[in-house]
Image 1 (cartoon, each protein chain N blue to C red):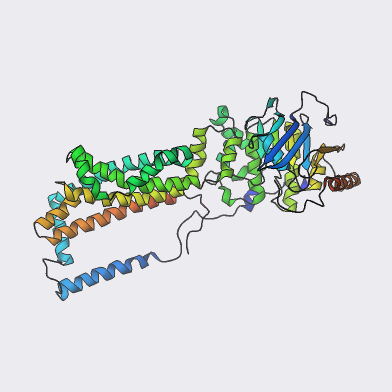
Image 2: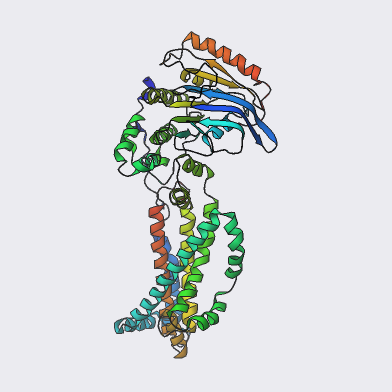
Length: 265
Length: 274
């Protein structure tokens, strides 16, 4: 049951569907007729050359970015704006600096659970191994801890789909690995559908059921490579190394050599 | 799995809450002491200035004691304080409402901000005759004038503060489905709070300014009246008692706001001076 989603047919049950999505930024076409599907309970990664529009796609799916052509559906509905069912983890923790950790997590709770949410918040903090810091302010946290609080806050909203925009790119390598393991354990417990944008091939390979490689700007395709390995995976698995080569090849075809200019869209 | 056992509490930087540090508080006493010293030297010791121009500190103290014992001083202080409280409450509340709406909406800004900027440039005293005409010589025109004085610094600072709210935090609010009002209450206002508090501090100073303007012109009570009374009866000691009381109360109201500022901005990670 953990091998969903290789069939890129038009299954109506998909958690995320992009159908010929077009996005134009100031007369620049970023996404051109892009199709993509993520199955329920799947972890899918999006990689691609810098500026290929993968973050833009993720923000479109979240509803934070508007005005697109084509069709976008997530958690059973067309995207018209942000929704509680669709969680988002940003590259930075984006905690509210005036709230302590507990209140920051409580911000994510559904309105009905905000009152008497203390027990829930406590459990969420335990899930991300931060039991002791509920009363601390964000400025007192290390980068990795702050990102774990952000993860707890995202989970507090009980999303059906969690979108992650390079969520571990700002922390050191060791912290990143521990955060990846944490994310996997949470996925094993909750089976939330996850779509992850990342620059880190190893991260994509370690976490995902499927890695989608977006073509260069404007992105017209997202070719998927299935990672059919059981989890937890061994980061040193030679099969992962083989898949990594495959990904590199796909990226070169996608034009990573040419796309050296500029930041990420 | 192995890496997940990072213990949170041990990694916590134990940082004391924001508090000014560095320079000794005694430094603040040097200038006032020097001023009082010069005052003593030129009145009691050397008599450079005649008493009908500048009475000695002892004379002013004696007058203050007399007024205090007779209850007159407290009556003036209470009158001025209640005017400030009412006027500033009205002005600051209106400023928070207007500043929030203008800060959030370009449409509202275009609609009312140009007009407010014109009104802001009317000198305080220019309002007085008109307010007296409309509201009589009772408390109402004084409170209105103080409200006008307190309004603008709060309004301007809040608008600036709201325009400086981090767009990224508003996205967080959107992702978690906060309603527009919740966004304002939970993200916009707390973000703009440092600006709002700075505005309140300037605003309360302005309110004192406008209070004296109001009391100088039409009043039978209040510290401004004490100044006028001193002028009419040629008693500079009365004026100085009024001036010192205004200075003390102004400083107290500012210090109160500063305390609130320090308490509610304890989360801030900003530079605090060396």
